[in-house]
Length: 299
Image 1 (cartoon, rainbow, N blue to C red):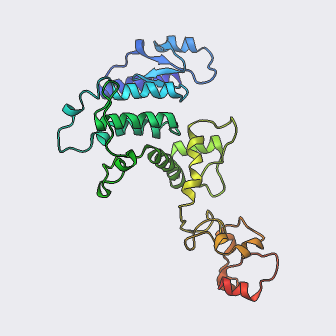
Image 2: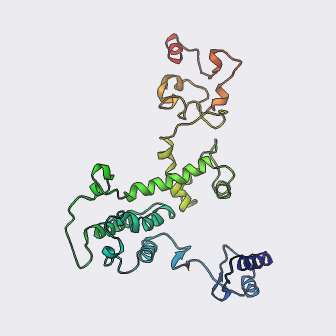
Image 3: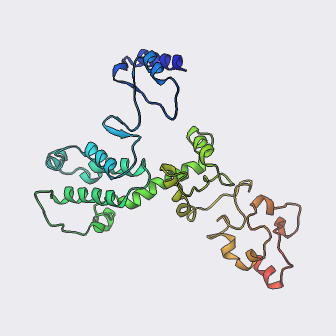
């Protein structure tokens, strides 16, 4: 494996024209690795460990307020408030979106749920940027912040709401997990956490096990699931009663009395559909014979 890694670095140098500085490189073990010092000596680099630093940003550190503070300091730099007027000429897009949004997106998208205190700190930075305030120059805020976050056609500046943006970006990962099939990252996540029947999401993790980035992403699945409508296809991944595939709500909400006497409340659409059966091919199983008014309801 070490030989393959050496070849990979050599091919990178040949293709890019760049040279890897092994004296500044570190071999960071994940878990228990035997003879790590000998491997690093053979490769010509040092032995490192987590947490570490990459491009000035913490790597492998817990996502606490101190970690976010380092990210913000690195992303925004020093003196960004002083130079805002010279950086953004008049007539360009809002500096709040152009300069600060990448930092906000970086902190809120890649690193699980954005803590409330960190979000409030980011919003304070945005407000100071907008109104020209700072630690030594307290200026009044002329408009409420929720109005500033409105769309421009509604009288706002189109500044992204950080809480909603964070939920949307986390939900996007749930969406990608649901629709992407043979990608490597999904296979890794599926192997680690397991997959719910139907393959739309991973199993929910509780307690200490599963704490981390994906657990925070998985929490947003239920909120996104309530807004989804399914195309049946072959019917093997869509629940007959519980998924929204026929109308604007699941069938168990449209027909609660029928759902109560159903013998297969978790049945798939493919299990209920029988092209050779009666009643237009639909054959749901009930615990008793249906009354006339219940039959009319189904029709």
